[in-house]
Each structure stands twice: as C-alpha cells, then as structure tokens.
Image 1 (cartoon, each protein chain N blue to C red):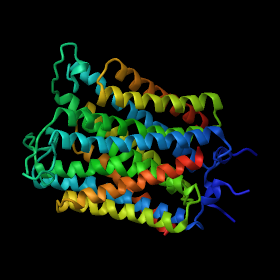
Image 2 (cartoon, rainbow over the protein chains, first blue to last red; image 1 turned 90 degrees about the vertical axis):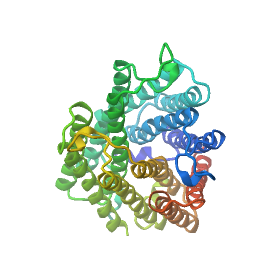
Image 3 (tube, each protein chain N blue to C red; image 1 turned 60 degrees about the vertical axis):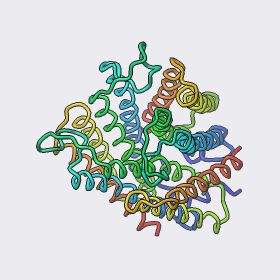
Image 4 (cartoon, rainbow over the protein chains, first blue to last red; image 1 turned 90 degrees about the horizontal axis):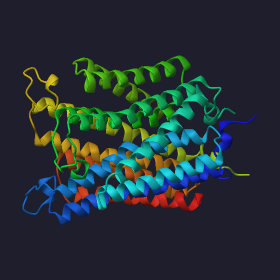
Length: 147
Length: 147
Length: 147
C-alpha cells in the first residue's frame, strides 16, 4: 500500500528539491542577521550600550529597514518550510511542486533585494504577494488531503 | 517492532489532526500579514517611504497593535508546530493529543481576536497562557520519551 | 537499501540527541516570553493600554532589551531546528552531529545570559557567531547531500 512515507526519499525529485531550496532559504535568512550587523557598524547605530565603545545608542533608518526586511523573512520563510514539507507528503505533481518551491525561493530573494538593498515598489509588493499565495495554495492542498 | 515512523500515517488520527490544524494555524498567521497591510492603508501609516505617494511615513497605534499580535503568533505558533510534530511521534493518547491540538488552535484564534480586533483582558492573558502551557506539556512529554 | 528514513529512529543517537535538545531550546524560548511579562510588570511598562489599570503605556529599556534577546532567539532557533532535522537525515558522523547540537544549545543559553540577564561583550557576539556558523555548516552539508 502506498504510504505518505514513500515521498520521504532522495529518489523523489519533489523531496530533494524541497530540501535543497530549504537550505537556500535558510542561508539567505542567516545573511540577513549578518547584514544587520554590517549596517549597525557602518551607521554606528547599536541597540545596546555595551556594543558601543562610548556607550552611545544611535538610531539609523538603514538599520531599521534591514531589520524590517529580516522580520518579513521570519514571518514568511519558516511557515513556508513547514507547509512545503507537509505538501511533499501529499504526492503532488512533480512539475507543479518543483516550480512552486523554486518560484517561492526566487520571490524571497527578489524581496530582500527590493526591500533592503535597492528599495523598489511595486516589485516588493508583488514578490511578497506571490510568496503568500504559494504558501496559501500549499496549505489548502494539505488541508484537503488530510481532512 | 513498533517504530516512531508508524505514527507518521494518514490512518493515525493524531497525525491527521496535527497536519490539519497546522494548516489552520498557518493560514491564520498569513492573514496577520494581510491585516497589517489593511491597517497601514486605512491609517496611511507606512514604514518605508517608497510605500507612500508623498513619501511620508506616519505612525499608527492600530498598526503597532496589529504588528504586536502578529509577532506574538511568530513567537508561539512555529514552536508549537515543531514540538507537536515530535509529540505525535511519541504515540500519545489519541484523546489527549487531538484535544490539546484543537485547544491550542482555538486559543490562538481567540488571542488574535482579543488582541488585534477587540482588545480584552484577561481573555488575552488566558488564551496566551493556555497556549504556552500546552507547548510546555508537549515539550516535557517529548523530552521524557527521547531522553 | 539504506534509506534516509533509517535515521528517523529512537535507536539513532543523533536523532535522539536532536529531539532532546530541540525540546531544551523550545522550553528556553518559551521562558523568554514569560521573562518579558516579568520585566513589564516590574517596570510597569506595558505596550497596550488595556494591560494597565490606569491605561498608561510606559517605555522601559529593560523590556526592550528582553524583547531583543527574544527576537534574536526567534531569528536563530526555529531555523536551526529545521536544518538540524534535515542534517540528521544525511547520516552524519555521530560524534560531530551530537556535539554540534550540544554546542549550539549551549551557545544559545549563554547568549540569553549575556544579553538579557548580565550584558557582556564580546561573549554575546561570540555565542551568537558560533550558533550562526553551526547552522551554516549544517545547511551546506544538507545542500551537498541532496543536490
């Protein structure tokens, strides 16, 4: 009898694609933390007084923008990773699943670029929206399969 | 020999319940991002100047409340989803497991309502506290099982 | 034929260690939420007016520091839990895997102590950095294995 566990294999292109892009998304999110440190040093804007030689805490628009971009990743990426894992267990079409995972990853990389590096609208809204739609679609597919 | 993998099946009511309510919690959390956008538009309070036609950044108590409610979800929901997954692997009582998952989901929906939509205390504190207690209980059960 | 599922067992010390320290990290993160409540009460600094008997909202450096420490956990811990799960599926060396998981957990506990309780640099930077490096290392190992 086929089991949901059969999807959980390196021979399944959906699962391999899922795991590979999960690591891409995680490495990308880790860089957000490092970029915040870079912005803090460049703008001499730290949040805690033990981080500054003179104990001065400054505010910087650059740092706040970087932190918002990072927070946006935290709002979207872990949830996607969880739901995409459950989605691979529903034996979806390889073509659809593989391309949705790739598209989500692309959208999040574009989102960071047009939010934190080179602020652009409506590119930021579009990349954010497509990511949300993909997560919604996968959630509904999983809910229908397991209901 | 029974294996923890036996729990990982659509025939296991604990696992099916877990996956279904996970999608409910994820869809609920996605709506928090959309609600923030609604509040930003209604109050004309954006955080980045490229979002406003006149480049004006306003502050709004409504938006900040909505963001705190969203952050509270991010603090509690992904952690619950992770620990509840491990908890289903410990072959818990179906009755207890299914009802704890349902109760956590209910508490988080109530929490959003009494935080972001119709601010009420102590309803917010109670719904937050029950969610934390359920996550603690499951964590201890998992720790004991795998220690 | 060996399968990645063979790693998914209570007989595998890497998997048992992973699950046990995941619960330690989750319980530790839950305490961050409770500590924020303690700081809010002690400093009478609440964020929502329904939380104060007189409806007064105060700002407190203590509360903001505690919230930054909590947010730092949210930036690092769920991502680690996800990537360490995938890493256990790559059949890593037991010695390396078990000690990396222990070291990450230790670093996050130290990080909380030197951030929220007794602010100290460079201890905070070092514990944060080691955690990031471990997550990077595991991500690369997973990406190579599944590519």
